[in-house]
Image (cartoon, rainbow, N blue to C red):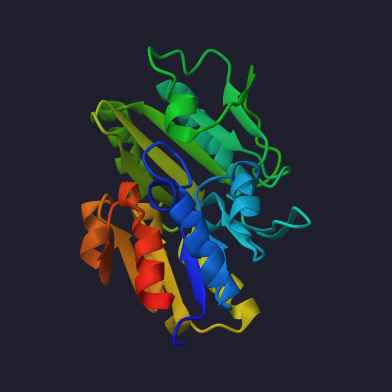
Length: 273
């Protein structure tokens, strides 16, 4: 068998539009592992929000979380690799976000990104953006202090405000941080994920593959959004979901059926089983 490792994004890829793992997907992932393939979950979620999928899928390999900034052992629930944004730079960004009154959260370095802080008085929007778009419940504090290299900073706010800040990020902080810009379905809100420079799902999965003695050519990667770009370009076979972003589909070697059609399961059944 040519392929030895499957790297799979969670939201919009492994899960359907109702954020569910379907029986067909579970069966396909379990069957792949029974045939000897390694399965690595590669997600923008933090560890605590990823672990619920480990048991049902029978995952045994390291998890790539926080978009590749953290690699963790799901069994011991220990951090194996952790990157971070320079504290002085992070504090500068926090000051700018406060001055612009943008909604943001910070994943602290002390907790490997498990502790999520937000400035008190923010996120008072008519929609629950924090839960709906980021899937988080943050601890609100009077002032967000940077005491160690944060794992990442996430922003969701009005499109016009976020776009302006994104332009400043890529102009002023290029090479110092990685900034991922996300849209929402109604284009009212826009999000930015600020990560340590040179950290992405591709580097995270490459680390796990090297530990397992697997070459990039032996990896199949599935994703749906721009944070999956480096991963699907690095893998021997990069697959974008039909429901994915236009850019990702343009760069992918193959398009899988939609997540609501068990697209990941269909590809596993066709190619690997």
